[in-house]
Length: 160
Image (cartoon, rainbow, N blue to C red; front, side):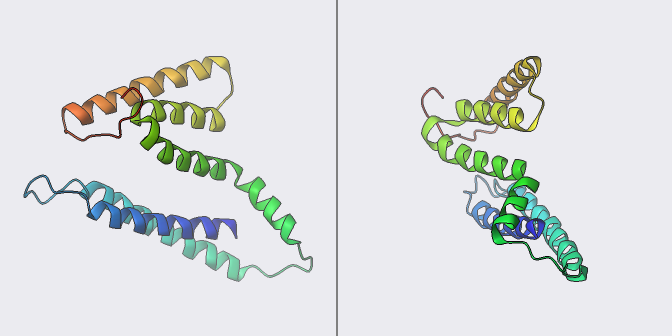
């Protein structure tokens, strides 16, 4: 049941991204605009999520209800245990989006990559150092490429 809910949420997110990306300003008369790639990704996400929802709905309809009934608290606990990493990542993504407007792209992205990688990945000190280095290099590379080559402005905050 949890997979079905997440699939529906992903469909809603993909529709929201598609509509939002359609409002990006056009920089030229070229057929591919700033919102073309995000719209493509949103359509792909929506299509794959729809397939996922249909498969899970078919499985759920084919499954016979068992004789034991779980309480609502047990269902919520089971859902959380099964999807703990997805929920934590979703919460960190929402915080990332909110904090990016206040703190700025560079700092928030580095912290987001390190924290999410630490939550999901291995917890060794060496891996944390590698993860931090990768986060800094990828974030700064993307920042300078988009700012200086593509002239895309990112949210600025405390330092950048």
